[in-house]
Length: 179
Image (tube, rainbow, N blue to C red; front, side, top):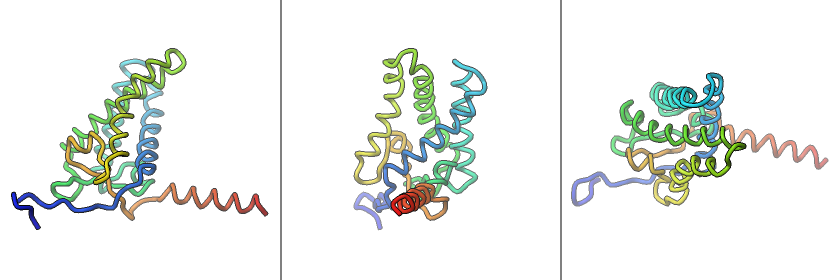
């Protein structure tokens, strides 16, 4: 079905709860931060961080049906709106380079937290603003990097469902403690 100007009509996709997107991003961020923390500090750590980010979020996503480690754990998949499939490597690279630079700034800010908290707030603000837009978007939950490169995050049944499993474990622990 097409609109009067012959563009494809946008359809609804399974919305991803903001918490799942946040946890997937945090898992990928912490994994890459841990990997880059072994090389030192400064510009070298930033370069290694962005390089590992691109490997995890472009190469792995391209080879793993649209899912990185964090996305797989939270049952999320990245999809291009234009062709309704996983974006090509070039689009993924541009998308994740934008987000990787923001995440690299946030990593630098978190490394400087005890030295200068104000700098931490300034360096974290780009990723917070980017992701806050996904929280406020009612139609597709698109962040700035999603809007720029015409991608969307959708729920999938392929994954580990880490948040559901942790929720069940917490519920079981609560039941045992009440008895």
